[in-house]
Image (cartoon, rainbow, N blue to C red; front, side):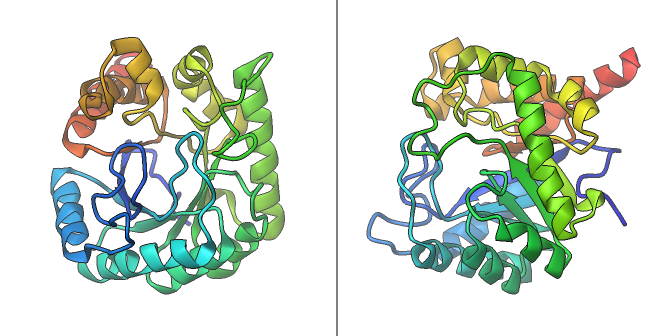
Length: 280
């Protein structure tokens, strides 16, 4: 069985949020009143693929710090039309970014082939069984608490060791439900309940995380607040910093990066991966 993210490249996972309130692109395709601009989402997806995206990641619930949970019905109504349209139009795999089994099931019915759960099965453990039953891939993120509470004084004695241990627990749940290792990826959850120093340690330690867990690692630094803290840049001016973070992730051994802007990230990971090859 082919691995979720082939080791002969750094996979570019492109973000396409069907939300009115995500921190970076909220409201781009779904208005505050709930109206979906499907044609614009399709055009944006085409641009992401043309720029080099390998996977399209569609989310219908903001998981920014402080965000409140969205009812499954609302989230499902946001993502399913987008997933269905993208699956019919493009050959690139479509990933659904959700913590909820009903939303994931509906998205898989609509053509998605990857489930990205930022909670690492903490929110809805049944996602593991669903992934096993459908034979789809599962991305397990690290998150303590919920998006609404995760930034309330995050504390780690050894952030890399603790995140590795908790992701191993999540992966164990997926395996127990019948998901094979080839279909599991872990995400250290940069920006999810971590402070600046912790985010930097996880980014620099992505390769060590992979070695400890033995599974592909996806890193998602795109436009996040730790980059703003380093550069002083507002959200929509953080793509250069994101590209730098992606180059580092590729250099230390990450298998995939999740980004809003693809073209720069594609170039960055090519350089990072080449430098990694030069040192091995």
